[in-house]
Image 1 (cartoon, rainbow, N blue to C red):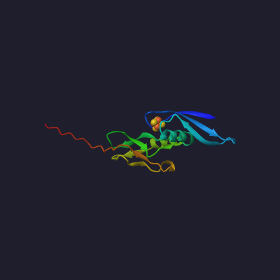
Image 2: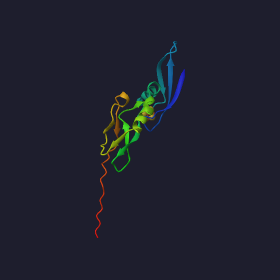
Image 3: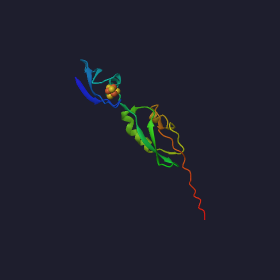
Image 4: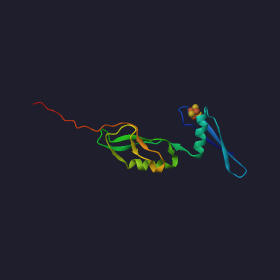
Length: 135
Ligand code: SF4
């Protein structure tokens, strides 16, 4: 019997989970039993965390021609945990130009995973401020 302790990160309550791996006589994992969850989402999270963990990634990319130098971005859906490092490398190499609208696709089909990197806010193009001085 193998039990893994986890904290469910699906909602702010943060239930303490115990996920038991059930192994058959041939030493194969046959199922998982989740304890400590208050709702069904916790059971789903516990099993996914043991089999195919994923995370939403949020970061920023460089933007040219706006009043700020970086714009916040996020993945359009959770990505496999093992792809996070590669995702951050791709995000760090990108530079975009203002204007940007919230939801714009910044990187399409990232790593062939059918996941996009999208802007999570809008940013207008910077306008030049001209000052008039009356003499
Ligand atoms: S098990 Fe349910 S209630 Fe508990 S942290 Fe997860 S989502 Fe929230």
